[in-house]
Image (cartoon, rainbow, N blue to C red; front, side):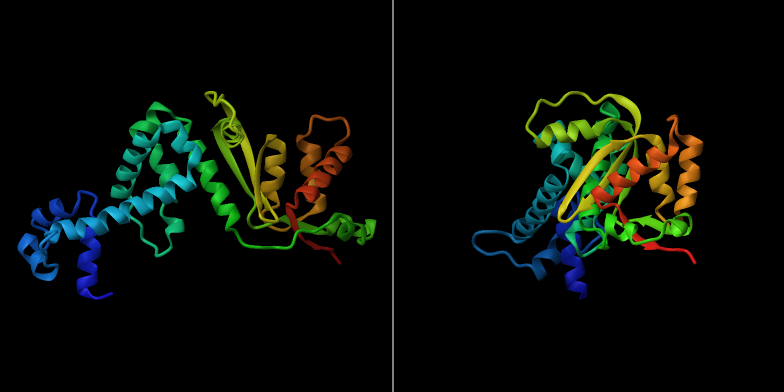
Length: 270
């Protein structure tokens, strides 16, 4: 990028606007801008640059609206635009791909006045962001029931399994999954219940799903983020389950994980 390109980029991306940035004394000033971006009979130098600055902001705004549709719906158009202006001033994009522009928005909400007024917004935005990240996450081939059936029972204790790299578990303070689902299905949105919950987010084929899971299941799936021996998972189930039959418990979980396509790499032990 040339010095001129850097200058134009700084001017059109300045949160305070092109004119305010030019007048602040940190740049080349109004006369310098006129020298490199001359006006014409219709628009002066600042007005010409403002066209690009406005297009730049609204492109990012529209992108974040698509990334956080339920957060947008909860806040309203005007308040969401105010949030995005504040956010971009604090976190200007640093990567070429627009996909990364809103990555820090959930954390930013924690200290923003809107997030303080409505504290569940951070968890809601985290869930919406996770859906994006899971959709774009690394590919892996999930294992199927037939893969497990081909392994002899004697080797099950030492075989290793793990979750797909895109599988994500969020620990939330609010039950925002219901809010997100209600918005997607066009149902009335109720204030989410405050509760410590774990939300599983995963991709199957080209669709991203999410559901609340029990803390015990969350612990098992977190354990399987790295290859883990099946015997180790069984030990954890025996230690944490309230059910009388831990074998049945691990069986049910395994069936559901296989159906949801959560697991990859089965490595039978020697």
